[in-house]
Length: 104
Image (cartoon, rainbow, N blue to C red; front, side, top):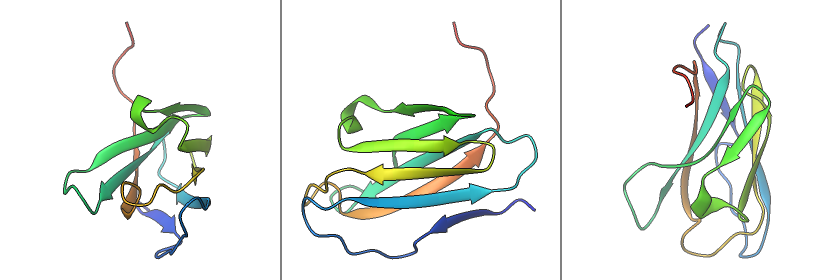
């Protein structure tokens, strides 16, 4: 099936707290799981991190606050290491994709 599952669905975390979100899929050949944030202060979807096979990448502005582990082929975990009050409040989304293109 082409479904992507994310848990937990709702979460309340105190400032300076930490939390882990899970994302999983069973889509054949898909090798990347991406995590996005839509903060309460901004309607844009911002890429936090992604994992290609077992290689994690955290976007520069989120380094030190988030970590990603797992395997892009099936399930991955987004760790929010230390909740900053306003900027980390919002919605979190995960997506699965097929990595394409070549790095130069």
